[in-house]
Length: 158
Image (tube, rainbow, N blue to C red; front, side, top):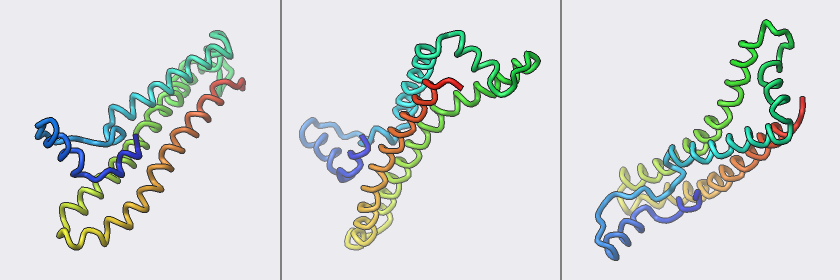
């Protein structure tokens, strides 16, 4: 999905207008929509919960949820709040990191094409496109590695 950002910004609207008669504005890259990236992160979150319960068992999962930092029963609520923030921050950070980086890259392409005259755009577009190729592959790699790390953390006992 990230590689779709390398397609020129005016190409798909031209194809949609020429072939299908659609003259609407189109957002080409799916990962520049926060709904897509958060949905992907929620799938990872569901897998974390599923494999954590599958590998550890429900009893051990709840024990980790309520007794992780402090083993004293007085701190059950504090432990639960702390672990809930720990669990919920993973999909939020995973989704928003991918969205923010991809959206910022697309906005920079739009700013270059909208604010500079056509004969001067290549001066900034070409270096940014080369840099952006590295960014899109790096973001896919980071999403994949963090998913693997989160799943491996869910499958280990403390």
